[in-house]
Image (cartoon, rainbow, N blue to C red; front, side, top):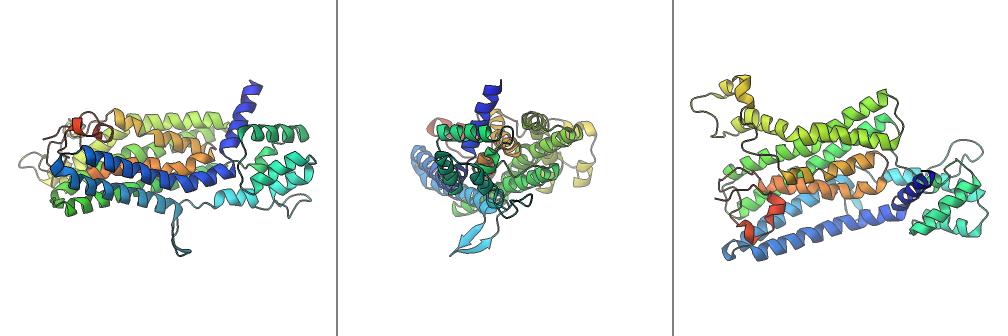
Length: 389
């Protein structure tokens, strides 16, 4: 068991080393754009001839606005070296803990990594530490050798964490603050997707007064089911674990994941549909409400009617469960895995794309794509229950 724990710790430090985090921060936006362009090209190629132009415009605008909003929200925006927009999740956490000063003992003005360098005499190990300090890449065997040598130098002191820092999130307050940041980061791609979808509809000559309704409803569905309620579930679990004084990262990961699954995955879709049916749809002038009923009457109808057929328009489906991979990643990030942070905006963008399309799996209006499922790979994006008029 001790060997397994040591191996997992080594691997965790390997994937959390500064060079990999930096590489992911630089690579994920580019890779996401390539995936979006590849999907657009393939989807356009497989579309009927008369639909190719509209399909290309729609996908390019939705994916473009979704990804742009996700990464600008996270990383901010610089033009000509000048910061125009400040990102929600600043990338200073790593640098603060990696290069920040220690204010204790006789090493008051030394950075943690330099403290370790002062204790090490082996030239090879010093070289490995200096590579980490310069944000150069170490392979897994080098990280294992570094970890072993530092443990032999100071047993139980975990000097490896001064060379490759742990996640900046340590206190309950920091974790709840990070949950709020993740909620904001997850929300903005949905807004971006809706904006991109509306612009695409306008360019393609659609009536946006009609198509906007489904985009807003799907946006709310994604926001509630896949972003807010999942983070709320993680937050409730975290609160309980903190009250029980649980310190283990592994137990916190399992506990928060259980909260995500309970509140977000099992209940999120139904809660979102309940709000859409009883509040959002009437405000949007949805014609599905009963004849002769006023908005006031609609809001104060019998509790049984409010819950009746709540999932009739938008049934939770297998793909919706698959989209919760971003929530698993979020919990992993909060539990101490720094490498997950850079990929979260790309994962959240999937919800934004669905919102931009205005996906409703039981809707048969012209707001849905008229492409045949056999002609495109849209089963993955739309889900298996879509009905095309």
